[in-house]
Amino acid sequence: MAKKQFKSESKRLLDLMIHSIYTHKEIFIRELISNASDAMDKLYYKSLSSKELNFDQEDYYIQVIPNKEDRTLTIIDTGIGMNKEELENNLGTIAKSGSLAFKEENQPQDGIDIIGQFGVGFYSSFMVAEEVTVKTKALGEESSWNWTSQGSDGYSINPGSKESTGTEIVLNIKENTEEENYDQYLDPYYLKGLIKKYSDFIRYPIKLLMTKSRLKEGEDQQFEEYQEEETVNSMVPIWRKNKNELTNEDYENFYQEKHYGYDKPLSHAHISVEGAFRYNAIFYIPEKASYDYYTKEFEKGLELYSSGVLIMHRAPELLPDHFSFVKGLVDSEDLSLNISREMLQQDRQLKLIAKNIEKQIKKELLNLLNNKREDYEKFYDSFGRQLKYGVYADFGQNKDLLAELLLFKSSKEGLLISFDEYLGRMKEEQKFIYYATGESTAKIEKLPQAELLQEKGYEILYLTEDIDEFALKVMNNYKEKEFKNISSQDLGIEDLDQKEELKEELEKNQDLYQEMKEILGDKILEVKPSRRLKKHPVCLTSGGDISIEMEKVLNQMPNNEGIKADKILEINIEHPAFKALEQAKTVSKEEFSLYTKLLYDQALLIEGLPIEDPVEFADNIWKLLK
Image 1 (cartoon, rainbow, N blue to C red):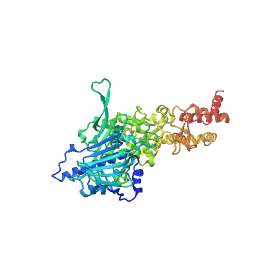
Image 2: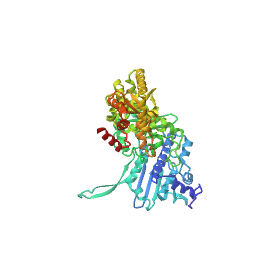
Image 3: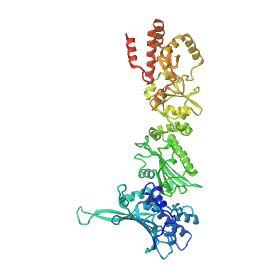
Image 4: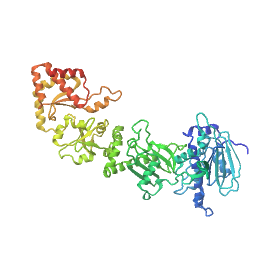
């Protein structure tokens, strides 16, 4: 029969199908296997409404046969097949889907899903094949037909010799080029990997002809090659099984099989949603972060399946950034996909899945926190930083969702506690949730600003990561209890008598404090007397929104040099250093200046801030020792 032109009229359209729609050439195997599965689903559906048809599951399978010598790859199904008219309509018209038409005409019942939607998947074959032949015989037909094409130059349909119902697709694989290794599509082990990746959960057996080796009979250490058909797909995905039939070991084995991580998951959740929009999902809370988790190279996302066929290896839309550590998958029959089935269309259904998964993840994390504390702390050690970033990001949009999940070390017992646990043991008169910042708990414990709070028995949260205080600043409060840095100017615990006493002291020695301020200049906002200090002579507190610790963090970032907190120098009026300061003021202006600078530098050192002029500091120490 003479060659016909494609009804979609243009070579340019087929070129677009082959070269632009699909990101990876290997996708062709997914598309052809999905079409084969559709063909058997159609036959199964027909058997439900016809007494003459008997659908025996064992008779339905897909065969994949690579032949390196002939450079052919053959895919055979025992499905419904096509007659001449269907060949003409389905393969002669690009982007017309026989599966979609079948679905619309027959409205398949629940549990029977036809994968194909767009009718372009078949043409992905031409990405790897220079010629494609389709040998097919339709159910109930006497004749069989062969459809042959070398791509955009058209196709021909001729009578065939196929005896059994079904379809056989023969791909003549292209020769290798400098850019592309086409030989891999003839390698059984490579094909097996692709089938496991994309089509592992097709409901029919996928049989692949594998080349194996064995010892020759009667010959010592001599091997011979032989071919054996092997079913390479799992068929029934774990997420479609009844949860009651599955054990923790089953879920852990699946985690390892999918290579979600080398660790053992701490927890998992199995979700099955029915109704107007159906989907199944399994997700895991890992114990450890991957080596690239906190790098720009890390890609978040859940695997996305449509009716058991892998569509995306990672679908980032399904996970918010604050839960990007979660591993797992979503499978739905109702997804809106783009024409290549490689990307999701942004729609309401997708957002609903993502929102529900976010709620389920939080629920699972709270379950760990409340019932498996040791496991939660292992998780938090790896991913707590990500939760804090989630609180801080997007102007605190997710702070209410994540606040319950945060833990910080406490001044009591040195253990990690949640905000709820802190509130549960607050003193009755306590107004604030107090926290302290520093490089380590050991350094924080020595901060002079904590002395008064420790004397009163108030608990302090220790913030040791650079993101910590930024997260708390965004939250501002937890269940109406405001956060208060122990280095804040006002701790909210000074009684009226103490405030009056400090006011009188400030008025009494106003000249001393003012002269110290003039000596230190714009390095500080003010100098004032303190009652928070017990053993130490001096400390720095902050008078604005930027704390001293935040100043250190921000100045380490690019283009942020020069950011400064409003520092207040507080003097312990009961300390001998203050008596020496008063005496120096009456003796010598130079000596008073020396004492002032040394006290300020001491306060900087306590805070872990750099001394602005180390040489001057060393000289001042020497002057003091004279």
